[in-house]
Image (cartoon, helix red, strand yellow):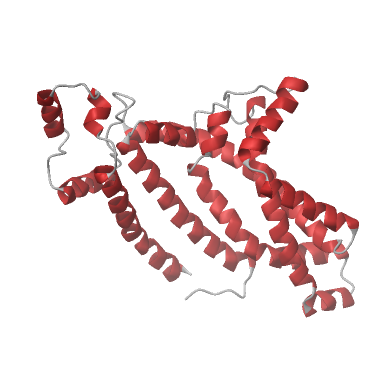
Length: 309
């Protein structure tokens, strides 16, 4: 297991170099100019040329990219073009913490309801309850965020006057309930469907019949044998959800006015804030690789038969 983890970690720098190269090339040769973003389109040519020299934009592409990589390895992602005087690292760190708490709340809803509902649907296979749960999962999985969010706002804020419509006060505030539901409902649907399919496959195995023949209680069979083996495919979804802790939710954070990483990404793209865009590409890429590695390790924890060499 240790050798497997080391090999996977050794691939991380190469992957991040490729991601940084592609993103840096898009930022350099794509539409928009960092100098125009900072000075505006009506700046005189002399000022533009002077700022371009100060920013090092007249140097060859690979020299600029190499300089950026060296600074990024030290945690220096440059200075934001939109938020003057703020470093990208400090700006992104505050936004990631907001998005991480929101995504954690959505994951809590998805895991807490999705896995039990999926297991229940598998146990009630062929009954009306199974059909109702599957329909519930398909409905919320197919409903886009820009429909779910306004519906919840109209219901809980405008009609029932129970929840605020926007803002952010932390994890234990009522302002997090609606955005967490918007992000968590598709998670409930996905986890329920995946758990149901995995549990139905496990229920047909010989060792389940053997466990029942031995007189084990149904609760013990469901928890120790069915749920544990059914979680193996579900871990993949949970691993990708872990990566989402630093990605944020573009639409949800924008609709509810949450100052998270998703909203920052939207603003940075519209304002051509390339240093922020670069950081928001590299950090989630690193998080995704680590999340996949954690998923692979959890496979072996859940199922001792899985061995990595």
